[in-house]
Length: 193
Image (cartoon, rainbow, N blue to C red; front, side):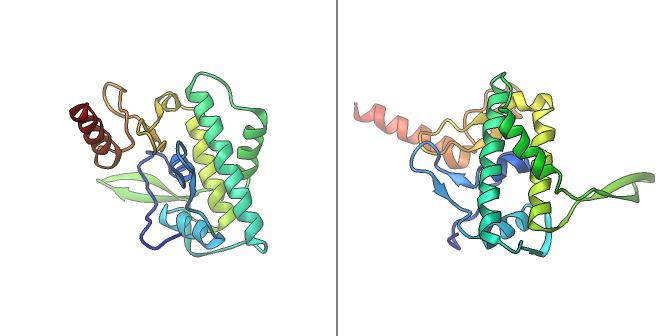
């Protein structure tokens, strides 16, 4: 991935941010996970793996599997958000990845004068990090929040996000990125005509 091409993390869920690593889905899709090292860096930037997380013995195969997981999550979430059920093959792909997720280590902490639990969920390798992404997707698929998953309304963007706006009518992944650009472009088209 190009150094100046930062990953967008506006999905509202880590699994949607992972889906959004394939950009410009409406136009010419652009891959941001070009190399296995990109996948490891993305997982670290998402706070899912320890620094220097191990790549598997066959890193190219791991990257291909990650991309397959990404598309299975995308299809499952969009299908469920639309009121349907995900395809069994997508459910199997997600479940297989979830199996690699590390179990959270339960720790006790004292916060605000109360005893609370904190679960540490950092993975030591890429497969376990992808398991955490898949676990987040499974949790989203089972929650009412899946009905609030949207696709950016920009002509080119198509990023996926959870609409947490009060009215539930958010149209763009981000006003600063797509919303304002779309509004300016539409205004200029009206002025020209």
